[in-house]
Amino acid sequence: PAQPVYAGDLPEGLKKISNIIAVSSCKGGVGKSTVAVNLAYTLAGMGARVGIFDADVFGPSLPNMVSPVNRLLVVNPENKSILPTEYLGVKLVSFGFAGQGRAIMRGPMVSGVINQLLTTTDWGELDYLVIDMPPGTGDIHLTLCQVAPLTAAVIVTTPQKLAFIDVAKGVRMFSKLKVPCVAVVENMCYFDADEKRYYPFGKGSGAQVVQQFGIPNLFDLPIRPTLSSSGDTGIPEVVSDPQGDVAKIFQNLGVCV
Ligand code: ADP
Picture 1 (cartoon, helix red, strand yellow):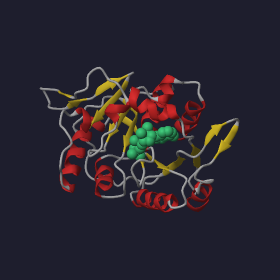
Picture 2 (cartoon, protein in one colour):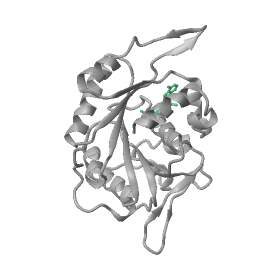
Picture 3 (tube, protein in one colour):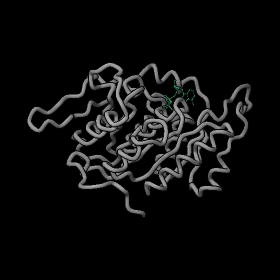
Picture 4 (tube, protein in one colour):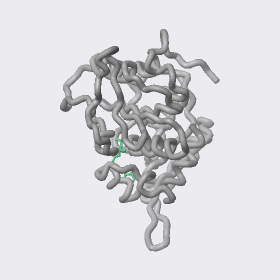
């Protein structure tokens, strides 16, 4: 595999992580966080040691999607490292657990905050760290790739035709950063009603993406009220319905990363 572009020495807190998986999308609201969280809990369900890093400083969604007892990150007084909070055995770090409200920050500050949260956390030994990337293809992504050697990227999109252009942007960005895109998830693809399957946005551009960019895996995720309500209950869908068809889709995705 290609060498990652990260510069300098690997921060101490990241040294015992085997795989860092970026879950990314060009636009907000396509289900990136939903995919990141359910992927993480699927991997944990398969027996892996897992952490989630919510890199979305402006709209951290992790605090709504999981329900840890302790909702504040703790700083180790000895070495000043951040100790993640935890829910069902998955380690969690989000700006939303940092005890601050929505902050107004300039770009470089955001990069700084993300850098600090990611690299001063004592993640311990992990098989997977899943990073819920901020939407877009900007500075923050470059920063993250420079401080952490990403193993693979999963791109989340919706089936509209225009979304194809976004996926192309994402794939190009990761290719420049020398991070392999292992899968595309087309979210909100279809729904089932009256024993029929409906594709409200048409049959997506997924097949075209796979063909054009040679991405080996494509997953279609249905529109599911339970996927959206799990964002309110704080229990990921793959945890509340581990035998469901959504859980099966995530198990297949889990095998790819
Ligand atoms: P992003 O991280 O891309 O901004 P989110 O994962 O926060 O997107 O999802 C945006 C909203 O859509 C959330 O309220 C989420 O619960 C809902 N949602 C995402 N995927 C689905 C789905 N497949 N079915 C139903 N609701 C979904």
